[in-house]
Length: 416
Image 1 (cartoon, rainbow, N blue to C red):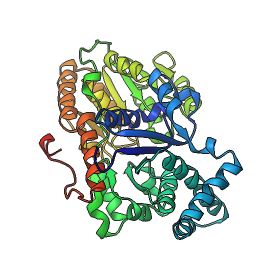
Image 2 (tube, rainbow, N blue to C red; image 1 turned 180 degrees about the vertical axis):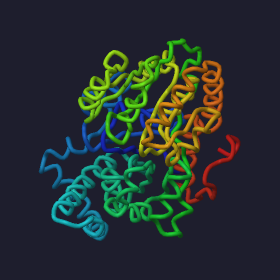
Image 3 (cartoon, rainbow, N blue to C red; image 1 turned 120 degrees about the horizontal axis):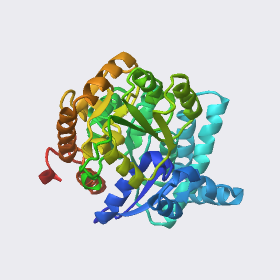
Image 4 (cartoon, rainbow, N blue to C red; image 1 turned 90 degrees about the horizontal axis):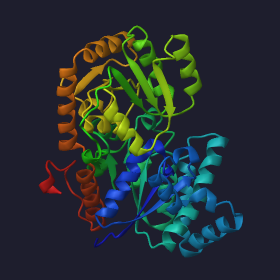
């Protein structure tokens, strides 16, 4: 790969059933010839290892906290970097203290991140890693930034949102952008938020790299299943599931399958019972990527009533499978879903609007088919895994050579 041949990937927990897009991105970069070492701050709960792919990735991943259980190992890692370059080491410590959001507890966390940074840096050095890429720009990205300052190994990160945009100062987003070699923003909306929290002289390294899917993975030979809805996601308030349950309470012909798990599962199951939906709503927990693909084929309409999102990969998967989608008009979602063409966008939190839309679409199989076809075409044009991985690969390589591309993203595949 020329100037950059060994990259490490880092996130807070890897692999997770809710972040399979990261795993697929890693696989696509490996297919392009990159040597990728995967790292994670914490070990993933076994509930997330729902398929062979996750299990294999977990077995080959380096876990920072597991390695940091030995105080002697932590001291050895820190002594290496202090002895090697005292100026860099002290600069990293200063950066950790400067980026603390304030308070004793937060300062303690910063020192933990600093301790983890040396452990991570030692592992990357031992494996001759030349660049680190982070996903989810919160705590793990803080570790990445401090590691880069301490070791001299460069880093970049993929910025998703939306939660980090609620507390950009807490997570030192401005400083992370400043210190990063480049930032991959998942949408124009995401990039605009990054611009609002960073200095103008760093805007040129904010590129748009969509999360992508492989359309060939999803069967568009759909199985008609009599007005069945599908939701896939984390069972947490931000996903808006209480609104969806309210919306279908007065639509007796509709059934709903909920794939996923999370802190609100019991509460949501109780709400379904209270609304008399127990026989029409199935909570089935986490499923493997293969099982999710099968469920996309066997349901009619995909629904994601979230209050805050980036550009949900699960929407791309549904559209790739030829499903019409009903979701909310927020953040970067309109960059993926064209209202009235590939699906419907409804106001977030409005269960009446959601109910009316679902009733309308469920009664029109021809429209469902038309929207599904339009959605798949949209994903094939702008959100394919191979194209986005090739663009990210180009960013890695060109920045390593010191020739940063001066475009937000390629206009067509010929530019990659």
